[in-house]
Each structure stands twice: as structure tokens, then as C-alpha cells.
Amino acid sequence: MLDQIAAGFRLVGRKVINGIWRLGFITRFLFAILMYSGTSFRRFGLTIREIYFAGVLSLIIILISGLFVGMVLGLQGYDTLQRYGSSDALGVLVALSLTRELGPVIAALLFASRAGSAMTAEIGLMKTTEQLAAMEMMAVNPIARVVAPRFWAGVLSMPLLAAMFSAMGVLGGYLVGVRLIGVDDGAFWSQMQSAVDFRFDIVNGIIKSVVFGIAITLISVFEGYDAPPTAEGVSGATTRTVVTSSLVILALDFVLTAFMFKGI
Amino acid sequence: MNRTTIDLWVGIFVTLGIAAVIFLALKVGNLSTSFNSEQTYTITANFDNIGGLKARAPVRSAGVVVGRVTSVQFDTKQYVAVVTMNIDERYPFSKDTSAAILTSGLLGEQYIGLKTGGDEDNLKNGDRLTITQSAVVLEDLIGRFLFSSAEKSASQPAASNPPAATATE
Image (cartoon, rainbow over all chains, first blue to last red; front, side, top):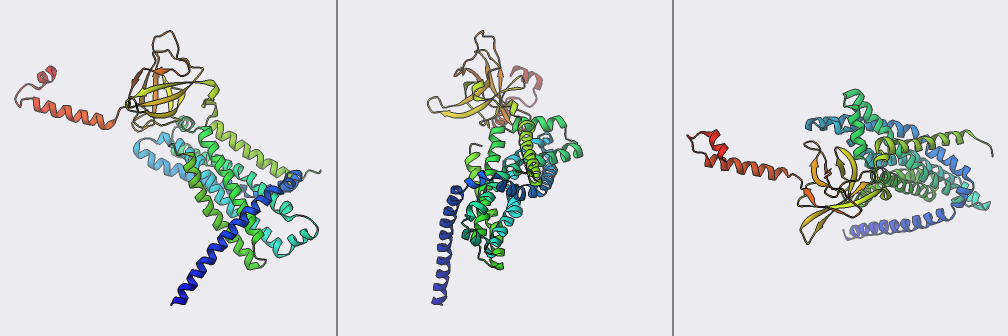
């Protein structure tokens, strides 16, 4: 019995120490990326290629999801608002929900699942097949050549994807609310425009998506770089990327919302 | 350096992203109606009760948005709410302008309505509005209605002429 309790404590202790060790390593890793980022900007072709893989290939899922989320918001929002005779406020509801919260958060969750997992798998497989070691042998820094361009590609792509998600969502809400249900066209746009503030709502949403972009890509490249060089190790790292990124996005969202919208 | 298909796709991606931001700014947020700090003048007004007025609420005159509430604070000397608002410089108001806290619709947002007076001098940066009307609090209204109807029914004799009694009240 005592042995089992001791084993339990040992396990918890090992997990805590491992967590702290990884936190220290990820901080050092971030500094290394920032230090070797010069290559990403000098040879911008490398970063452009990664923007293609992270951003352009995520476009379809982001645009379609944005449209459907906006359409659902339009339906649900109308159902609730018409009970109080305020269906004209549908535009405000759709736009504020998307620009402040759903746009940055859902786009980030989709980005982590689509692009983040791909980044982890790619870097993890490069490590498993000893391509990273071979680069070091040829005096090519793998952080400068492989990790930093992916990091900056993710950071640059994320806000653009979130903006596209929000814009498509507003169009989806418009299609369902105005075209399908018959909410007044003028009231939909004018109430939206008088309630949504560019600097307060839209810029804060963009700032959120930049922070999410940094978090997701850092977790993705770190998990790939730190993956055990086995098939099981790479698959575990890919799963960890999606799980950790999703949790970090939701936690960061709460913290950022508390900072940005505390005056409400 | 050769152009590649990837460059084209990334170009399209960035263009779409920037277009989305511009759409959000102009069509959703309407950047043109938000006011820059250089193009506005600040005025304050004291209210006994602001109801649910919040920072960033619109300031309207004749239904047109002419400014925004920047902050709502509590004056510990006079025990009133001090509302600071930025008014667009394009819209000058006379010194004796009155401010009222109004509600758009039954369940709509609260905003400040300005009604200009007849003074020849206009408000300047840092001026204070002296004529103000507080927010109408629904509970106060209901309470007043209940109180007056109870008073009425108590003062009316059962067989007397009701219209005459109401008229003398």
C-alpha cells in the first residue's frame, strides 16, 4: 500500500519536473528562433513557401467554416432576438460575436488542427530520418533553416486567416438573416456599423489572433523538434500539438478578453 | 529570382486577407464614423443617475452620432456621475446645450442625446454641460406609478364622482 502511494508521488513529481523542464526548453527554443530569424527574412522565399503550406492550404477550411458559423449565428441569433422584437439587432450580434471572439478563436483552433499538426509531423519526421542532424553536419543551422521560417509563416498567416473567417461569417449571417429570413437590409448593416468599433473590436480581435498565431506555431515547431525519433513519437507529438494548442488558445482567450474588454 | 506558382498563391492569400480586414473596417466597423483624438473636443457632464450608460456609448444629436462617451467616473465630492465625451470637431454646440441619457427602443442601448440652446458662444475643449437629465430608471417609474395609483384609490370616496376627483387632484 505504502509502496503504491510512494509510486504515485514519484509519478506526479516526475510529471511536474518534466513539465518545468519542457517550459524552460520551450523558452530557450523561442529565444533561439528569434535569434536566428534573420535567415527567414533575408531568404524570404523560405518563409513564402511555408506561408503557402500553413496559410494558403488552410484557406478552404477557414472560409467554409467561417461561412457556416456565420449562418448558424444568423439563425440562432434571429430565433432569440425576434422573441424580444429586436431582430434588427441581428447584424450587431453576428459582427460582435465574430470579430471579438469566434473569428480569432475558431480560426486558431482550425489552424492548430490543420497547419500546426502538419508542421509538427514534418519537423518530427525530419528529425526521425536524421535530416536535422545531417543539416548540422553540413553547418546549416536547423532552427534558422527549418524552424524559424515555419514560425514566422504561422505568425503572419494567422491574423489574415482570422480576418477572412470573420468576414465570411458576417457574409454568412447576412445571407441567412437578410436574404433567407428577411431582416431589414439597411438595419442589419447600419446597426452593425454603429455598434462595432474598428479600434476596440476589430483591432483587438486581430491582436488576439496574432497572439494565438505565436502560441500555436511555437507549440507546433517545438513539439516536432522535441519529438522522440520514432513513428510512435511523431504521432504522439502531433496529438500533443493539437491538444496543447487548443487548451492554450482557450486559456489565452480568457486572459486576453479580461485585459481587453474589462471595461464592459 | 524566378516567380513560382507558390508566390502567386501566397499573393492571392495575402490580398484576400487584406481585403477581409478592409471589409471588416469599412463595412462592419465603419472606420469612417469613428473619431480621431485630434479631430474631437472633450466635454463633461454631471448626471445624478447614468442608468446603464457605458464608455463608448454614442452621443447623438437629432439622431446623428456626433461623438462617443470616453469615460464614466464617480465624483466623490458631489456624489454624481461625471461623463466625459469626445465630440467631433465638425459639430459645434452652443454653451447652453443640454444633455439627456436616452434609450434607443425599449430594450436598446443607452446613449447621450444633445439638444443645442440659443447661446452664441460654442462649447470648447474641457467645458462642462450644466443642463442635464438623468436616465429614466424603469423601477423608479413603476414605483412612482404604484404609489400614485394607491394614493388615488385611497383619496377617492366609493360613491363620489371619479372624474371630478381626478381633476381636483
